[in-house]
Image 1 (cartoon, rainbow, N blue to C red):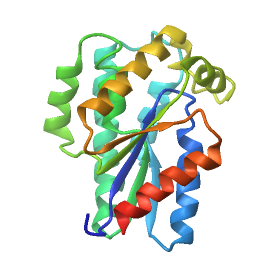
Image 2 (cartoon, rainbow, N blue to C red):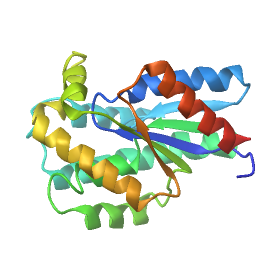
Image 3 (cartoon, rainbow, N blue to C red):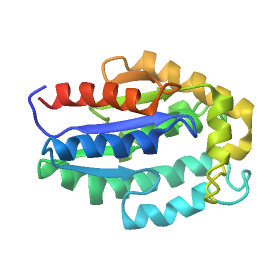
Image 4 (tube, rainbow, N blue to C red):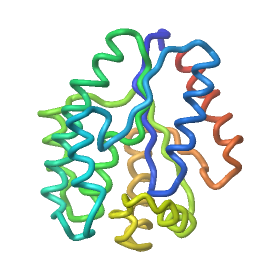
Length: 208
């Protein structure tokens, strides 16, 4: 790659440590003097943050998978317009906690055979893929315990239970095989600092 700003995403099951690793990467990039923006989905822009509350709080059965796809796509479009594109256009690398891959797995693969619906909407309304995606992979049981222990009121997807988390893990690993040119599977069951070292090394090579 040519050293320009990049769009980097972190994916994985709930509780796999994405937020921790994103913060650590941000610290590494700041130390290296690399301008960047740290963001998340659903959310990352004022309008998308409003939609986030509809998606991550409340009864697990609150929305059908089809409705979730529409809500996630609406939030993602606002995020793209208001945060991602402007940052990249001014030379800042974007690090996002989730993007379209999460919708492909959560709604497209584990809550019905809706992958084609997700892809059609993505092509029409988003039309952007990350340059680099880290998929944090770990034991679903351990991740679920960690996710439910956060107690932040955003456990709607964790409350679908262990079987759902196991299907998510399989879905993300399938996705990594589908997009090998941009996806890197990271063993997230290790020491957090060792994980951060692996991620930072890869990112700095990409940005060099």
